[in-house]
Image (tube, rainbow, N blue to C red; front, side, top):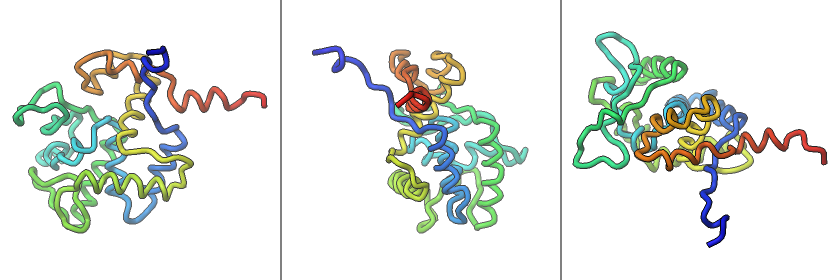
Length: 208
């Protein structure tokens, strides 16, 4: 095995321009607010699609205090065994995301969606039931097409982007490990690799 075969490739990520275009495409569309909040949730917390789909209103919103929680305890997560809860499986919400979720709760009421404790946070439009992972993947493909991005990505690339963004902002791999909820630091080190944004910036002014 040669060196190239034994070296992990850096994850595919969205550049800052791609992130803005993607969020703007759904954020400015009358039918895109749910998806805008969902994608913002992924970019702000690095949660996986099935973890987001499983969220209930009560997981993120404290009705008695009428506020969005700072931390969300996950009830469904990768590697879960027998439905057991792990206090380490939580997400801390950025301020911008909490603001969007406040608006989202008002929006849910305005369109007739339930906001009871056990009601799903993200609902499929056609069925009124909890959003399915395939619906999330379809929405991701739809909005990036409408955003006219030059390349395609999967929903999981939003997780890669979130963790890479965090490392670029902090240069703290242990912090990224905690947000990623990785058991081993070796799994997290991939986010210390040069990102697609780093490459774009590096070659921007090359003479040619």
